[in-house]
Each structure stands twice: as C-alpha cells, then as structure tokens.
Image 1 (spheres, rainbow, N blue to C red):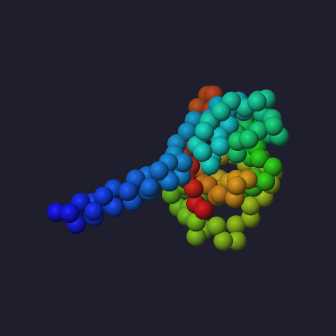
Image 2: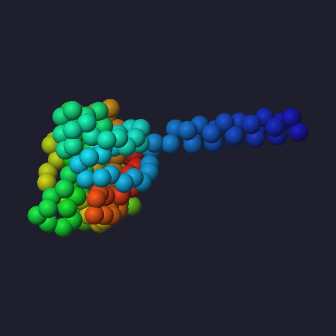
Image 3: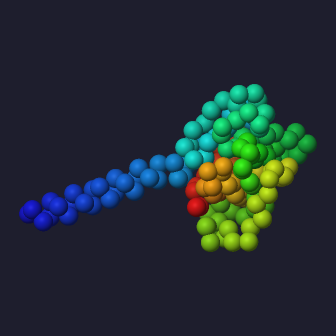
Length: 150
C-alpha cells in the first residue's frame, strides 16, 4: 500500500508539472483588428498602447486589417527581435517543429492574408517559435489557434 501511494503521488506531480508547463503552450484567442495584441509566451491579450503601432509594444503580434482584399487579416509582429513566416495553403495541423528546418523567417511581416487554410510561424523575442492557424475572421477581428513548436 505504501509503495502504491508513493507511485501515485509521483504520477500526480508529473502530471501537474506537465499541465503547468503547457498552460501557455497552446490556445485559441480572438484579437480585435489593430487594437488588441497577443503575448504568445504568456497567452495574454492586451490593448495596444497606440492602435496599430508596432513599435511601442511588449506583446508579440497584432492583427492588421487590409481593406483591399478578403481575408482582411494580416499577422504583424510587434517585437524588435520578432520574425514571421507565412505558410500560405498549409493547414495548422500539418505544421510540426520538424517542418521548421530551412524555413525562411523574415522580419518585418509581409502583407500576406491570414486565412483559415494558412499557418503563420512566429519567433518571439524570447526565441520561442509558435504556429498560428485556423483563422476565423469576424467583422471586428480574428479568432485563431496557436501552439508552441520550440
């Protein structure tokens, strides 16, 4: 009985640590066009200090609005060391960390639409690499999934 307790106690702590370390590893969020931004490392959504201003931010991304086409959404990096790659026509679930080798991450982001079938790769100023995808555009913003790759 004592051995079973020790074993189950260890399993509990291992599972608890897995849950705690993965809290900000993946999620789904809704960002309003140009007025809200997302810190991918923490999962925190905040109001942009100055709407659309990418230079005065501590977050990683915001969603810009391009009225000239549909979808209107464009992922824009807001950090100085941030780099982005847009994988047009590549589904979110098809991208894994093994797909990153040889990927051209460029800064600043190109004016490329962010649609449901596209995946955006973002490297944060902290060096973490995330994928964003499954974008669903609304009148005021975009909801999307994100997950840490590295």
